[in-house]
Image (cartoon, rainbow, N blue to C red):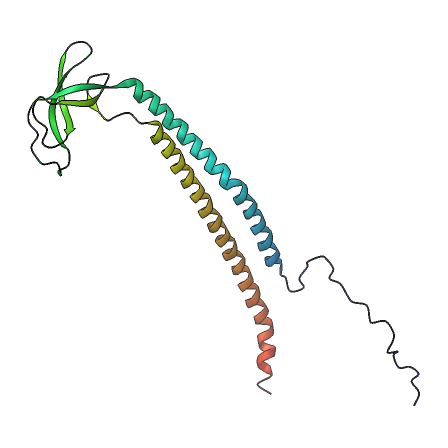
Length: 201
């Protein structure tokens, strides 16, 4: 039997067809490619935007708080006041408002209400903070308060950027999924009559 015309067993294998572009997927749809590019852009914005937003918001809040610290420190000062009556209660009770009296920088006697430990007797010395107009007020903010505020606002900004990233990611996928479903429905409308006809023969 002649082997003429039969392919040679030792001949080279048929050439392998490479994909038209590196990393291309023949099953990839336009919406898949759009989703891939959108995800890359979102990741870039997330990686660059997260530290920028957190740092910017944190520093802004810190600087604003430090201005408040400086302003309050200039407008408030601590004085020694005296209780005008006994403060009833035990050591386990919370602080209570009580009347106190002190002398301001002009030598005028002033009175006001301050939180005092229960059980403190009349005439005891109490340190209170007063404003320039002689009103008892809260202590001024400290540097620790400003630092804490800066970190808290920075963390909130980072959380907002993270939430925005996931919301944009979910929104993009939802829009593209709607396009995919619409495309599938259109294709099924074309294929379904031919498919169903097979069962009616």
